[in-house]
Length: 88
Image (cartoon, rainbow, N blue to C red):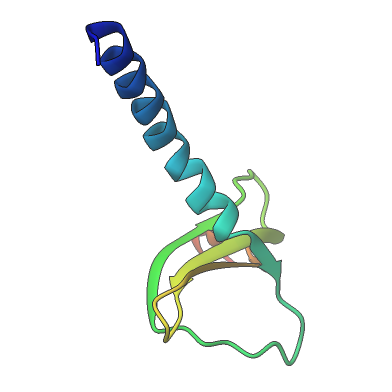
């Protein structure tokens, strides 16, 4: 092997490694919650919601590990967090 071949192999490996997070994100493609959806949540990784200036329903997402260790994501509707900050 010459230096050019080794450098090319390293570049391909580095580019492939950069694609892994994107593949992991696709693996955890979000499912939409519906009443009665079976939830197998072993560990919550993150909770996020769409940002907005008004109080009301927003889309939210939970990313979690199931009991088999697979990363999954679930999208659902919830009241915006800023609804809690409004006096009433």
